[in-house]
Length: 51
Image 1: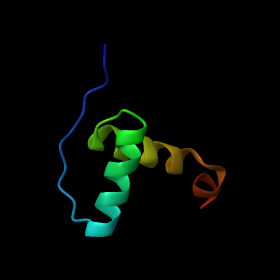
Image 2: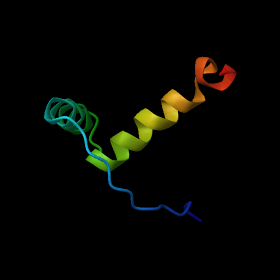
Image 3: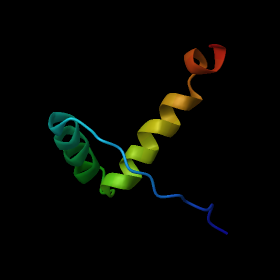
Image 4: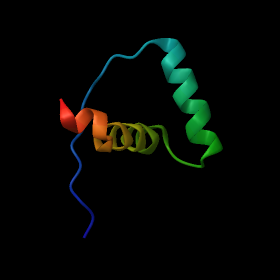
């Protein structure tokens, strides 16, 4: 079973949105999927875990 997802609303700078859209398209993912990927990667890093 897929994990449950929750909708959230965030405000991002226009240049960040464009960069993420481009990266998501290159990786054949949706904008939302790519944001999830970026956040999971960041949160799984040792640097974050130690703080």
